Image 1 (cartoon, one colour):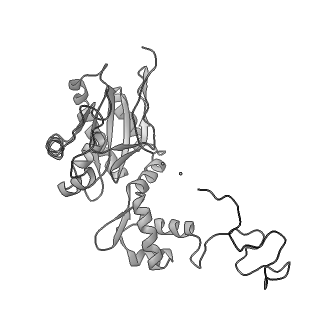
Image 2 (cartoon, helix red, strand yellow):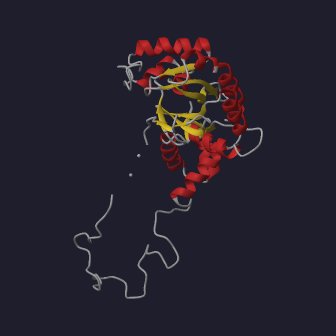
Image 3 (spheres, helix red, strand yellow):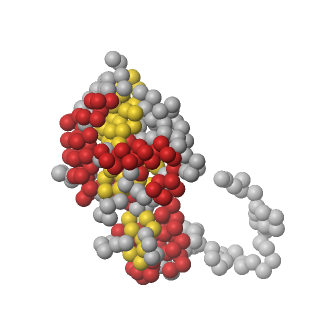
Length: 300
């Protein structure tokens, strides 16, 4: 078979000014009344060699954000808002605003009692760095690929999606269109359902919608009742299956990777195509997938 491409869909996401001076702005070469004489910089004008931008005694917005991320990642978390502000040297109000933005992006996770811990995307960055070490993530995923002969994905949970952070292609004469950085739905993917199975029912409903999740193929579970019954089976078996629920011809088996608190931070899966791998063979990979998820837990 020639290199057929099997597509897998995901979701990814960018004003301009025309340079016209606003009304009341002096035309070029005309100094407004009361303006400083030539050669005298007006207050707030950057001097040569400096950049314009919002700064404060705590530094630029980027500098503050990076220091807050470092404070969040420090041992002993999740950390209190007050402690993070002190450690980063950023006012408490600014720290709270930056943390809210970082949480929306998945780099920080808001805990109870105004505490914040590392989010899935921050853990993902850590995993990518750690993956260069022997006996770590790369070895585990490569072992799973060798044991199954199939394509392997590692993804982290963020909001309503999981995001691929690693992909190892099989040696078979076809390629899936998934890629690192692609976001995939929770309710119709093997990794996503494995993650949902580890969350409280109320949180599952909040993530998938009270009216039921959206359909992507004829096999997608699109009612809350059907999805909850499926998640009960996932909990009982310890693995989840995507049987052409996200895209026709694609079957996957996945298991959740738990974080330090037991909540799933993501999952690992084996991806196959229906015209080469049957459902029974797919499920035979489940023990290897579960073993890989357990081995990955301390690394994520």
